[in-house]
Image 1 (tube, rainbow, N blue to C red):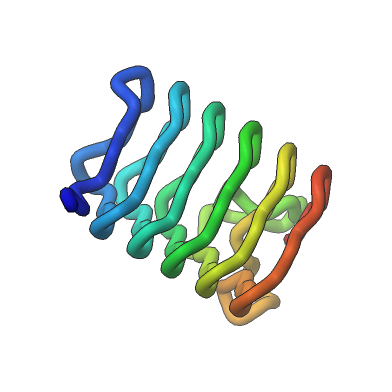
Image 2 (cartoon, rainbow, N blue to C red):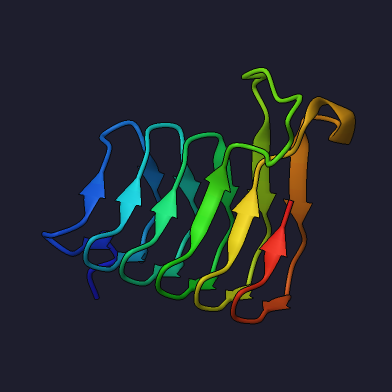
Length: 123
């Protein structure tokens, strides 16, 4: 069985993004340079995954999610913040997960085996 990432031809994946074996990327999804996607993670259509984002193994990300966008903090000054998502999470439609701030040790972290229901916001 071929484990090469399956990227829909309508998706945009920067060559500097790292996709592990078995990753599936849906149509119109954008994955930026510096993003790392773990094995067997499935990303639906119309998802944006920004750089400085690390997603573990066997996650399921549904359509219209924003993953790793700049922090929603007025004092953000382009610090090198990051987002770390563990393994086996389910992230449902229209969820937004922002990178951390200097006040949060520079990272937003989500562990393993979580269900983030539709319209959830994590900052």
